[in-house]
Image (cartoon, rainbow, N blue to C red; front, side, top):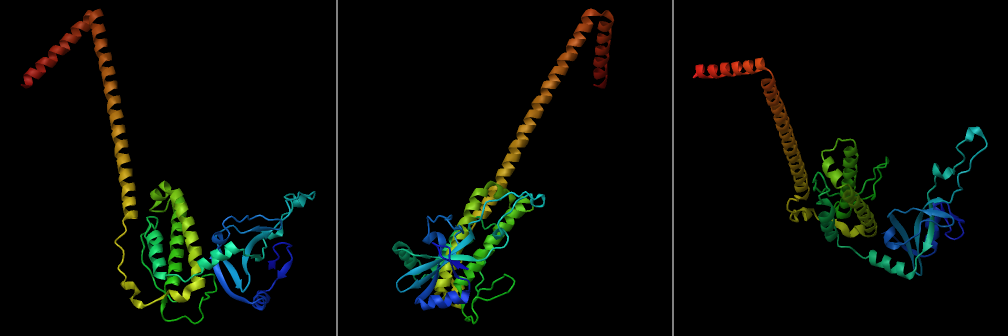
Length: 334
């Protein structure tokens, strides 16, 4: 459903009707652009709507004289929770939208500045440069924990939403760099999410790295999501120029990225050093404690013998007799 941005009036409730009407209004193109790029300071809360705040690929319809962005509405404004006098409804009444949402949208007309941003974004792209930038920044990142830099070239995108629908009905035989990059970034995103989840369950071999660099990894994931949104938008606008020949793989592979390996080794070495220092500290404390106890016990025994010898003649006789026996036994062994 598409509602009017100002009045909340229902304008379209059919995809077919919307497409036909856009054609009747001389709409020439539909392009995608990351939401935050076109609306960097967009307020998500308005009188009638709460808008989606993520950096999703935003559809823009370009006409001869004006352009409109199809902005996703998270939900319409709902009433505050009202308590009920009925004991069967003690929790009160919440809006049905929270459990039964429609796909809500509204159309926002672009101003001149937004139009310029859009025109700059939809210019033809150098896909090999995009590949090199993504490879350097994300694929070879130290947070690609498994250092899987393999890159599979494909000629189509397949949706894994349960319907196995293809983006192109009649794909070309040539491989497409844009489609391949999307698959790679999605797999990288899934791998990081999986390792973070397994780390919480203490089942990841990268738990130490994740624990020590958790904030950096979260920031990297946010950047990865923004990059994926930008990549999807460029792909929708310009995938025809992203086809590459089979000799694309002849581009020299990058040198082995040792950032993650070095990081892992550094973490392990730090752990070993910490354990070694801890063992040294423990050993020193134990030795000092035993020495102090030995001195205390020895002094106590010596004082006890001295006191007995000084106060009792029998104790003095016994002490000297034992001392003589020890001396004779040592002399006899020699």
